[in-house]
Image 1: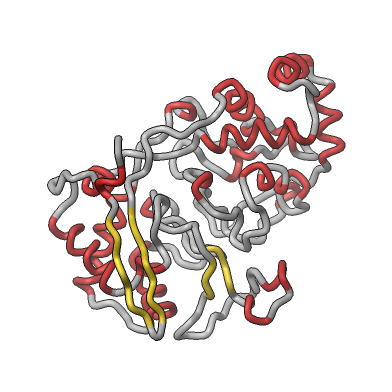
Image 2 (image 1 turned 135 degrees about the horizontal axis):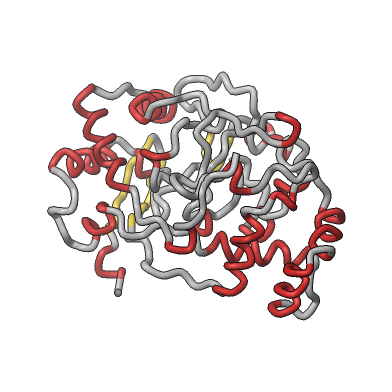
Length: 312
């Protein structure tokens, strides 16, 4: 399908800034190695990666529903809470950086971080590799796919190949962008117009409707967040309270919201962002219309995960 016919190019004028944005339908296919993705799928659901052998990637990323969690902070090893709200793994391959603070450049870098995070799996890569090498099935499968067999690089590669497969195309809004104007309701169309007019699209744009830039949380109202975002990575004052803008795909399924999971409803999330980022509250009819639009962003769950259930 030639998506160039469906590009919607918009110019949103913000105070002293001219921002060019575009929304495009999500591609129906993404390129990945299926055999490696199947191995990554097994690893994703296997608590062998955690120190106590009780926590898997699937424990915090519920692939049977939203690819995220349903609590503000996921619970990791020994009952410890994660530092940030768990973002959805769905469509993460389209993010320009991974994690709220953008500390990983891609899925391959991201894959190993939770393993050694003391609040998540609390393990070491060295121990994980030893455990995998003691498992005959993993030894066989890795050797078949990678010349070096089980290694740090092959482990991250298999997990990242699975991550690439986790895309959710064919949302009602994708069909709308492709020319089917009956795919979403009149209220949702009005919500999309407001989404553009109010400036939401200046940060939430591209294939993932977000996930492609950083922005400060609290432009018009000061952030009360305890987390300093990018500042922890760069130590630059201008990066305080700067976070990666999240994707809005499937957003109606991924409550609670914000980097700290402090907002429980989509309506409250839209209103908060309108006040904090755009400097104006929403009228009720505007709010309901934008929420109706956001509800059209739910795509199809990929077939590779249809037999996977949450493992808490």
